[in-house]
Length: 388
RNA sequence: GGUGGGGUACCGAAGUGGCCAACCGGGGCAGACUGUAAAUCUGCUGUCUCUGACUUCCUUGGUUCGAAUCCAAGCCCCACCA
Image (cartoon, rainbow, N blue to C red; front, top):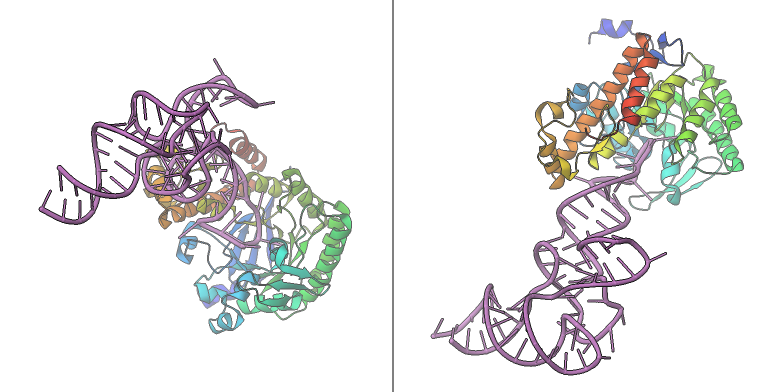
């Protein structure tokens, strides 16, 4: 791109709401970052360790990914700050020049709960790799994210497990808010945005309080807002409740990101509530475990019934895997443990997710979101056969 | 032809008198997976009228209250020797 084009770009953090649905909270938008715009609603593939597993940056670009995730905790351990700094940051390191969002390590407070101790100022972790002990608080997390040079840095938070007591949740919210204040005032990479995270578990008043307190920081460097502590093992109604309890208390003119949500149907529901961004390991992890996603729901490609089925993973799909290979072949690759099998399904699943979001955006722009969602719901939730 | 070793469920392989429908691994089948300690994990895998019953451990016959396990014969496989 030319300098002129770069110069004319809106400043990082600019969020244009392009179209709002009349019947629901759904909207389309465009969020500008230091590495360009992302269209919302958007799905962000997860590349924890500087790679969306099995894919290279070129694949992601060809699939139409507009933004991917990296992880502060994991990248701090390996390759570590020194190497990352020497390599010019995450974009240059992995040859990806589109936007990157980095998770702060807050999720590891949850997922590595057996290897950490939470204090008022941060978290003492014991490395899952070699047992080395280290401290990560809001300052440490933001420093790592500054070095990574992500376009969107997440505030270091405490991702609350489910279920938990109200007292525990209140305490976690207090810490998350206190840490958020620290996060927004730490040094940043050029143009780097910072998003705060709403916690509160299943208590509406805690989520409201957290959302309002974060919103109050919007003029002090809080560029966007996320909903955390959902999809941490709770039943689906609680996932949707956590989102519903949070979104009404977040500003309409700022991006809203539901963290970790990645069920297609759940995302369409969340968009209806006004959510703009999502990330999830489901399409990539489940691909590695042999499951493909389609417009009609997921199904196991590894299943023996496809042994001689010459159809692609999904009929009518335009992804590189479906363009060339049969499910019989891919099933065989999975069956014998060939790495290409999981890569092909990963390509397909990411394509499926990105296409799902693109058609959703088109439907919103065409004032047809409700109809689109009705059809998607039918296909995803009530279609009787899997894989057809 | 001789000597030695061996034949166990789809495959490999434990078990050498009762706790054996038979450890374990592979394969097969099914399920789970939501800001990635995950190319991982879990369950099932003789038959049935399935909280019980029936038929199994090369074949046949025998010993024993009781046999995959002991004895005899036969068939087959492997190694070495001629």
